Length: 312
Ligand SMILES: [Zn+2]
Image 1 (cartoon, protein in one colour):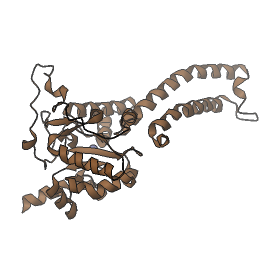
Image 2: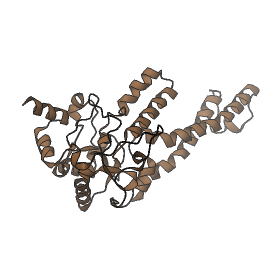
Image 3: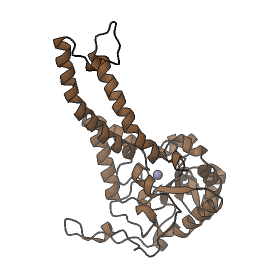
Image 4: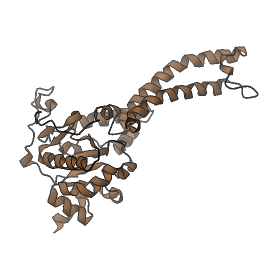
């Protein structure tokens, strides 16, 4: 059963990288004509060639180090579900109800000594709150949350329905896994900054790095995850956040049933021009049971649904 988990696959990868790195040196250091490529490396060869090889050998260690760093960081940057979560996330999904409602980092005073904002009680939170590029949330928008397993958190407003959905999905013999949930403004800012830095480190100009980063990570305030009502849910057997996720058993079940629990697939494939977000078959947004049915049967996005309501 473990064979199909990414963590196992990942463990094999460095070995392959090492081999490739060695091959790279052999190819570039060797004279092109007539010889046995596999044995050249050990031979002394002509003086110039030998020196070049030595210099290249010295480069091998930093190269491997860089490769290792990238190997561990890239999956975290590109996927919602990093390798660490993958390892922790085996076993049943369960809430830990006794944990505090507000996340600890929001309860403390900030550096300036200004107390962090008080979380919005579930009864006062609007389940239809629209968050996107044109409707960003202020930094002090903090919902009342409940802690989930693996460092995840949910708004209290949708906690029971989320729990029911996950329970029923598991009861159907499936293995759903929440790999992204409530994200504070500060957390979003951190992700966004890291992504910009990633592109700058690759040699992009600051303005271009910002443009590229914005395509992958929502700028702070512009992510629905700040409401605590949005969740990225994947199949434990396939945790990559790409379009293939829609064909997993968990996604098939959720796409059919999430609406009964008040969740919609928020970024459908044919509506990217409306939402401004690529198709995300893993991203579910809570809007409440009644509205979820309405939105789902109408084929509208949350943007369109809210707009049609205002026009009536
Ligand atoms: Zn998401």
